[in-house]
Length: 116
Image (cartoon, rainbow, N blue to C red; front, side):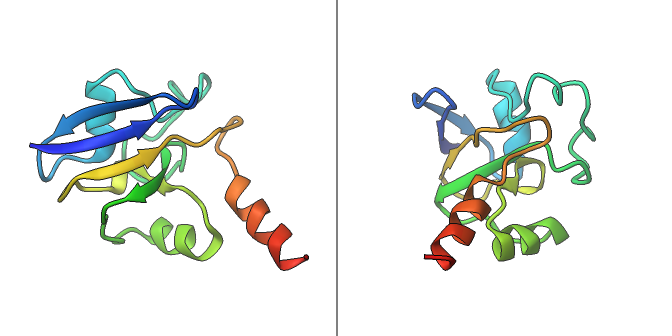
């Protein structure tokens, strides 16, 4: 079993376990942790990687980038899609503060640093 440490929106942390090969989204939902907002709980793609509503920040551990969104996430500092993260090792993730579809907090911080 792999250990996933999840920092929740309220700042608390929860440790959960999952099996290698499961997606992070599956493990989060099985443990009653949602990567979605109130609105996107019902309005999402069901883990197909097309709606970008299940994003998480990876704090530590490795998750291979295989989905086209991963390249954009790396380039523009977006959260990674939990439905496209196949568990291979222990991970620490943080749920981002989201509005309706997601948050651009890191991109905005990155842009602000460039303008300093």
